[in-house]
Amino acid sequence: MTAVRLADVQKTFPIPSGGETVALEAIELEIGTREFVSLIGPSGCGKSTLLRVVGDLIQPTAGSVEVNGKPAHQARLDRDYGMVFQAPVLFDWRTVEGNVRLPLEVMGFAPSERDRRVREMLDLVELGGFRSHYPHQLSGGMQQRVAIARALAFQPPILLMDEPFGALDEMTRERLNTELLRIWAQTGTTIIFVTHSIPEAVFLSTRVVSMSPRPGRITSVIEIDLPQPRTDQTRESERYFELVTEVRESLRGRVSSSAARARAEGRIG
Amino acid sequence: MSDAAEMARSPAPARSAASLLAARVLQYLPAALVFVAGIVLWEFAAAGTGRRVIPPPSAIAAAFVEEGQLLRRATTATFIEALGGLAIGTVLGVLVAFSTSRWATARGILVPVAIASSAVPLIAIAPILNNWFGILNPLSKMMMAALLVFFPIMINVTRGLVEVPPAALELMRSYATSEWEVLRKVRVPNMLPFFFTALKVGTTLTFIGAIVGEYFGGTSEVLGRVVITSMSSGSFDLAWAGILLGSAGAIVSYLVVALVERLVIPWYASLQREAG
Image (tube, rainbow over all chains, first blue to last red; front, side, top):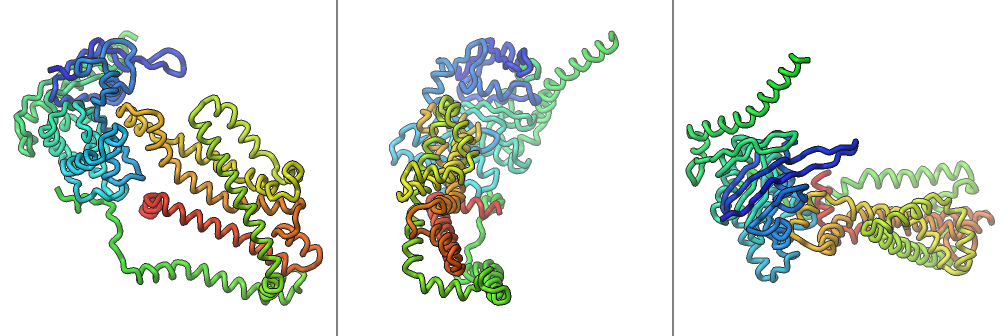
């Protein structure tokens, strides 16, 4: 089953000085249900923009975005998306429990159902003991786990994650990666994950989509055939290193070819 | 995974009530000592300069007793004016803030007017307000106070409603929720700390407004008139008693607002503690 289908998606932004910048160009991508797809690339390659186009937070200038067989806009209205950002975006005035309950409140879940799901989600991210804490009483990693619990509370079929572990230290990030894979396996959610960490993308994904900037476009899609479930041993396997290298080269290939072009132009000038 | 290890900012361990009390006393002890020393110094300094310039604290204390009836009535009257002004200014400020943050048209019309209102030298307006609302009507003093309170309330509440992290709005958008829910669940709670900060400023401003209004005429049994008439009759001790009561009114209102703030947004106090 196809979860997301992007056909010839284009996004341009007007720039204040006049003219426009092309954030996304000719994006073609299909993502199957229960896939874990990472979008990777340097800053400005449009990976966050692409995530927001899928989530109907930004309208594409051209092209079509289909999610679960309907337009992205309808999918948002049907509450098909859970979102996790780089900052946890927890509300200071709500406890851990209150934050996870927020989407359930605005979506009109019955109070007993809310309580049940909040408990279930906090157990899922292993924060059951912190339900009455306020966000500022938690570490960054724990805050991000609350954000994940909140995103999953209403069981959205698609989870959109925008560099969710980008602000965390390496140890915490690796631990949360493993935890995210466990949650992914348990919930059966399709995940689209934006990152600029190559090892993270390889460890987590079923496919890695590498992108290049100006204009933002997809340069290659790499199948990650590491066996599931992935563990700390995965990070030490030979295949893992091969794939990390492959992704790195796919990103660098673009850079070196444009460098070559620049050199060539320099010679001509 | 070890959550204890991950707790970067664990709450302070619970301390016994007695040690908390001791810590509080130690915290405020220097300020209290300086205050008492100031009073004592004042008493002796005043004895040297003569009571016409600065009456000694003992003389002011005596005035409290001698003119107790008058001072009580004056304080009550001024307190009512100040609280009325605080209420009017707050309600108007909040209403304008809600409409300006919601509708761009309202913003275009009301914000320039509000900024202009803050530029008006309010003392110049006091006689006009007395004229409009009746010099003997406490409402004229309330309006004076309300004018002073209005601006900080309006500006702060607007900021609190508008300055919401963009990601929080994206999050709510991904829930496909209504603007009303965003207001209720995000903007209003986000605004409350801003509101209480402005309200605390307002508690001192409102007493200034009420007393300035009184200076420009009206009933005689109000703190402003007590200060003016006792100055002109040479009863400086009574004038100082009036001034002290005015300050006490502002301090008490401030403390009440601070207490209400603690009750309404307990998370904010805890956030401040950890940040500080």
